[in-house]
Image 1 (spheres, rainbow, N blue to C red):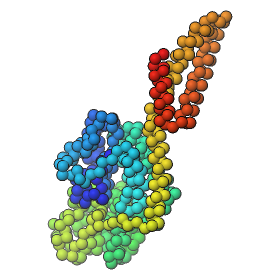
Image 2: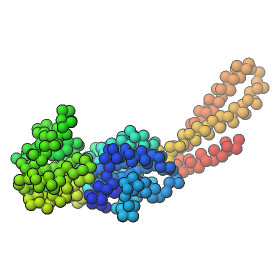
Image 3: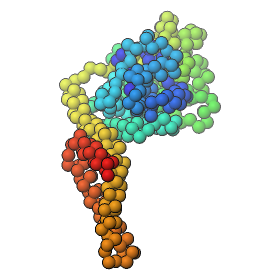
Image 4: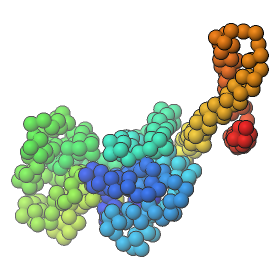
Amino acid sequence: MIGIDHTRAGIDVRTVFSFTKKKMAEALAVLQKVPGIEGCVLISTCNRMELWASTDDGFPEEGLYEQLCKIKEADPEMYRPYFVFRKEREAVQHLFWLAGGLKSRILGEDQIVTQVGEALSFAREQYATDSVMETLFRMAVTAAKKVKTEVELSHTDNSVVRTAIDTLKEQGQTFSGKKCMVIGNGVMGKLTATMLLAEGADVTVTVRQYRSGIVEIPLGCKRIDYGARMELFPKCDYVVSATVSPNYTVTKELVAQAYAKEVVLIDLAVPRDIEPTVTELPGVQLYDIDCFRAEARSEAQKAAIAQAEHCMEEQIEEFFNWYEGRDIVPRIQSIKEEAAADVEARLTKKLQHLPMEAKELEELKQEILQASMRAMNHMLFGLRDEVSSRTFLECLDGLEKVYGNT
């Protein structure tokens, strides 16, 4: 996998490599045609972008990065320092920890496991996954859900919205009785509106006109058409934007024409929703997603992280047991068939001398063959469960050579 996240790059660099759903589908279509890539998945969130792939042994070390830069029309030399490259066990461990919220800015955040699951589902819809990507991502999500039920990573609501509200309150901001507009009615927008309502704010949510008849907004919120957002703007104390739009939802020009008092703008989107130069206007404060950090770890949280990592390791080993053995069943079947053919050849010589009818001889031969297959099956799968993976694979190699020479 290759990835870029909030620990290595600011929002402007992350924006270069962010994906809308449409662009993600286009990228997966391109990647599927690259020789050596057998399956791929893209994760694109506010804090990170990761490209995952299962490849054949001959795939070049920097092949994924080169393909990504081609898709994004980005200079590979300029952005390489911002990227991390992982493979094999390091990559697998990272995905499990990521899904469990151990890699998040907000420890144990609730959204990331959903985002990892949705990334797999989306790649599957584009016919971009293979058995390795399917199994890896499904097991990572399962492990993350197990951690959430068994390990208490945090006593608080684990979301960037909660952190944003708490950070602003620590700085003296208040929300009770204040007029707030939330631009965007997706997952992040709904969560923001709900939490602002809980703080006692008067919340209005924007909806697109062509969707206004079917879209649901959080109970207790007002609604306004997205096109009329700047008409409401002068009355707002807070404006939060959390969309997946590739364009600014709030520009300096629009704010200059509309604002009538001090206002706090909160941009929770990547790419940015709010033009950064709005801060040049007097009385306008702007916070983007990188302003809200929750990286300090208490001793209790460190202990919980260690517990979660231990829990994850068991699931990681389960994945590698599957991964290393995914081609064992066909090999066992092939050995059994070769062994059966060997037994049949030896039986035919012996049985033809017995004083029995042809039908009875054939029935006896089939019974002996089936018993031989069952014994072979019991021996091989029993051996697999009793010895190490390395020893078992060596045994398979030996049996294949033996029966290959019969």
